[in-house]
Image 1 (cartoon, protein in one colour):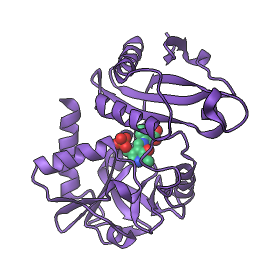
Image 2: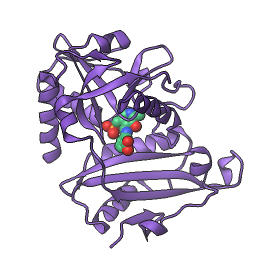
Image 3: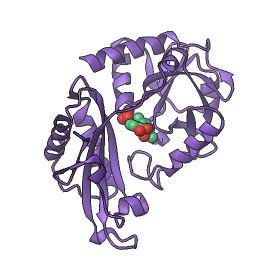
Length: 284
Ligand code: PXG
């Protein structure tokens, strides 16, 4: 059976799952989304993702035509229809089809649930770590399209990603308008310095990642000293360890930044420990 995509309450075969060319999600990137994992047949951190989706929608004045409970059921139904045990859910709410103008008042929101697979970084990168560069594109100013909103407008991040790829890397660190470290193009960033785990605070211009929050919780439980900290590029250059977190990447070590070797040049001990705790958490 082809992949079944849920659109506004109906299932469509993948190739027949379509939206209007007048949809403001396509025309203007007007909408919000979530990326969620399915581990062992369970939707991972389902409520956290749904909550963030509704917060994102509220922030852009988009009323989702379902209650959170109905949304969760649509997700569960789509997972079941696709018989997915391990996979990836892309939940999208677009402003919907309107006319060719920015005014969203004629738009009827479209809710889409896609259940498919996710491609991981090659396994050896989880052992050896990623090399990253700092992007010349800064993260969006919080008074523009706020990074705390997971909106359909990812052009800024895509430009940073292209820059990373051109530099021979898979990820880029994005700074904020003050020159402070924010996050990567689709992952949050952590460093370890003198045994203390640090990550930028939400107001540094980041998406407050579900994986980020889980890793903080795991670190605290394991007794790893932790603080949210404002950081500059210098802090990542001189870090003892560095790693990224995200639904797609999970927890992955970074071993080189702008050509500088991070710590020992290998996945560090605290990163390793947190990766193990994360792996345990997704199995539970
Ligand atoms: N920052 C940004 C800008 C993101 O887009 C994260 C941090 C991590 O958040 P979570 O909640 O996932 O821990 C994200 C999430 C993809 C993909 O296809 C990207 C994300 C999630 C899932 C898939 O590249 N980004």
